[in-house]
Image 1 (cartoon, rainbow, N blue to C red):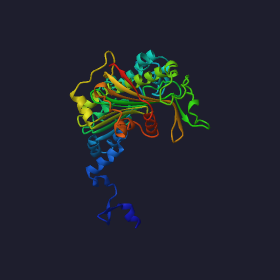
Image 2: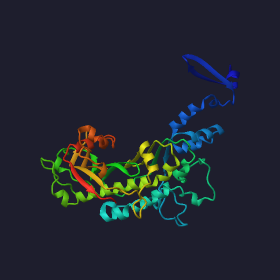
Image 3: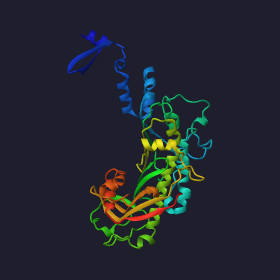
Image 4: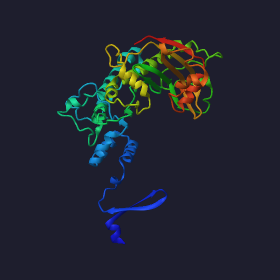
Length: 399
């Protein structure tokens, strides 16, 4: 019995309801018994490009099958500074202060600083991450299709060239571009693009925190940590109080909106090489580890981008925004079922002016489905609660 166990391996499987034993000599590779289609299902479930790179080194067969995977996740480990590091800092780790310095600090302290300064460096760093020439310029020769170990030093464009039948792609950045906002501010956005912006939904709050005893009083919910106080409760008709316009509340929401749109436009512009290289792509998501912003593109939008060139904003690496119609909902204070309290809660829904109609956010749930679908719980509930309040319509010129 012991000799039998030492000299063979037994695999049990169920085929058609019968118990069968598969045995082979010691050293047999039982993966050879699995069809290619099943291995591809396993590789697609793995998804992560680093793990797939390691799988490709296991055997010649795996090396040939991995490039046929159609669903891939690329996690970018670090943001590369927009300036070449000095010789003294070239050996610093990705998490060092040098790498972290590309994130703007205190970007909401002034509108001009936000739009013209605070976002520029993160966008430049993002461009270096996604640019095909990012890492190639520092190496004398091209690397193998899938790097053996750590692929984080390669740009996504470079790594993804190995995948010939890519249909579903998700890229995750280490952090959102708007990481330097005032303490306590919560900001989330989701945008979809074709050759230009299709829609964008933004949910913001001057503070978000667990509810405390006695917090149910709507008018007594100050903005914690933001350096501003939210105005008193809206009147019975839902009108925003005059103090909202005079204490910087409206200005701050405008900053949130412009900053989110610029971040989305920068991501979209820099995805062009990847989209051009992979003509079979059916879905693409570009998000971040902070879950702050998500850019999505479906099959039709990807094809639209391939057929119609992107219009770039003058002097910047981002897609030109068309004229926009915006709908804004505001509540000084809302408490979600799970106990999360949002002070100064604001919802902004955005469409190109040419696509906006009176029914864009009307006709009940059907008309606002695109707004609600932008967020997971509990933020979807927050959006639903805000949609019941008075709507304010705004227009924004192309920029």
